[in-house]
Image (cartoon, rainbow, N blue to C red; front, side, top):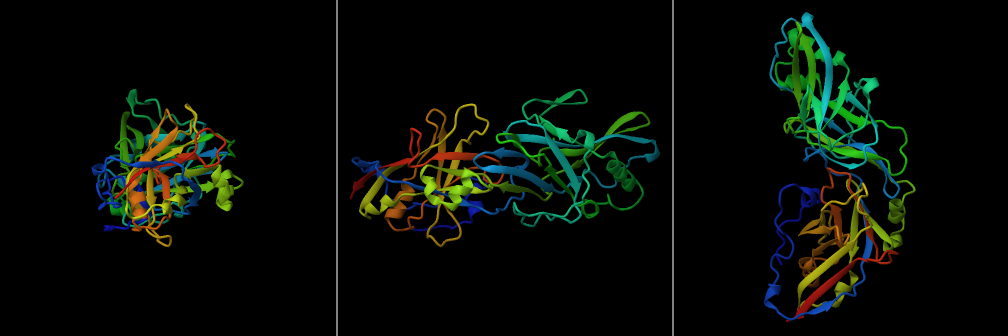
Length: 424
């Protein structure tokens, strides 16, 4: 067996680009063997892995908002970003004739998780710089001013990611629109016009204004309340806009967030006194149910019975079926896929891509995948039987969570693996 690459956990599991299969590349072609023996009586030991932090910079979208889940706890997401000017040394003309009407941070929705309960949004000016060639983790903080830039009368917003947003009588894609203090907009206009040099280049501007920190600051939420929202900062609809009048004429000036800007999501999850914390402290409870959640929890499944196979047995199929607890219409819906990874040895730090994702079936309420390459690799002793690691596909840019049925579940469906093999 040739192992091509042992990748780090984040790059292996959750990069947006398609990965080459790194597990079982040199296996025999099981399609050449017509007859097989099927076994479906395997015991599956289930548990979880808690991840303390992960790289969360410059991914497809940032996350923002809060929801409280009775099983997973309090999920609270915020993000940091630089901003850029649209052109150097903008000419605002006679600034004495300018009246700033509003200063709005518009964030175009890329998805959501939870409900649309009103939340209190805050925006702060960074006091320390960000760098687009630096690595930022989901536990990182960057220092910021102590006073929010948000108009306190407009800080409470009920997110609406489903309906078009109306701007100047035009319908645009749904946005979260946060009203900022117009004094900052006036400051920008003044500094762009007084020869300060702050607008001479994007580098000069980012040295002057280092970026923004956006978060929610809510009173305690009841279980089952709240939501987390996804924003693509590279979308042209996402920008910071000054709306002003000059000599009676309405005008705008935009600041951008794009792929050149550094950005990352920060996530806090409080699991105190939750079933997830209980399982983390007592692995035996994983026999009833076990969990996966973006930014923190990976499910783990070990199949001890693979030791009964020998190297002269060829695996045709290994159908893994993972039923979940979900009722149609529940706001905490699972994603369409989960990723499956493993470790080559129990002491290895990174995960290996199995080359397989498990797909969700709404009718069966389960994720399923053919993991024959993983099973064959264990049988051939190319890897240790360390188990399969199951994670939401968008592990570092969503708030998705999943409750899996365990081996001793009180529900109808149990996790299982059905293996068909041939002696050769």
